[in-house]
Image (cartoon, rainbow, N blue to C red):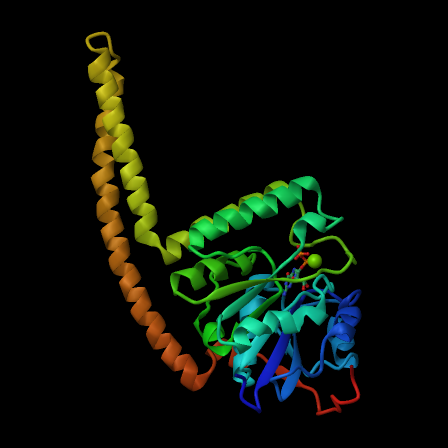
Length: 334
Ligand SMILES: Nc1nc2c(ncn2[C@@H]2O[C@H](COP(=O)(O)OP(=O)(O)O)[C@@H](O)[C@H]2O)c(=O)[nH]1
Ligand SMILES: [Mg+2]
């Protein structure tokens, strides 16, 4: 059960969102059962329009100015760090274009409040989203399937940005990629054994085209790169062992084919087979080294977690100005 006095922070990473931010903020809740306070944190990622001004006018409690545009993934992690520093017990992330239905935030919080999850991800009704093309729908489904496999979790909608994090989960997550945080955090959470829950949520009609998905080929390439990199970061030995097994098997198959075709077989086949067979053990040895490095990483992460728990923040965020609005009446808002 949620103890009284708990703080929920709703964070929104923004880059030039003057067109839609007021609509998004108008829909956000000011009170939620189980939380003494609900505050809004805007991460202004170097916007050149009136994003910060609109956020202030619409009642944002905190605005984190990143100065220059650092990209969504960095803005997201800076937001989590700032929310932790502000004392958040739970952090909800949503998008500035009002894509997600804010009245579904209680649904998102349910598995956290009951203690069934550390991270909850809102699953969009992708099949019923009119502005998604058939290709985009198919790719979203395929992408989530690949991420389920890569993260060993049952996440339903891996690229959804409508999420709720327990403080414990927020303290543990780190993002290395600059493009998007959605896929990497799922793979990382899976590797750390965090419980991920998926809940169905609703979306609103499109207010503007996606800025993250500018073209399908570049989105697919970037997402595939993110998944492979995250897999290499969080499960390095498995990836190398799979490559070792594949090359050794191919090598053996080439040698067997060469022996079967002899004496008319091309000698190059034997050479390729021998090279592949020899590469297998090398990759196996690399897997062992990667595993040792991963063990060190886990130890470092434990140290970092302990340090974060005490100091709450890394130095860079402390240097960034967090503009805190003078207290205003939450009771008067919706
Ligand atoms: N901080 C930051 N946020 C961004 C950037 N690009 C997009 N976003 C935010 O990421 C969220 C999702 O972006 P959007 O264009 O709606 O992509 P979609 O999720 O594909 O619909 C919104 O809140 C945007 O403001 C960026 O460069 N920096
Ligand atoms: Mg959007």
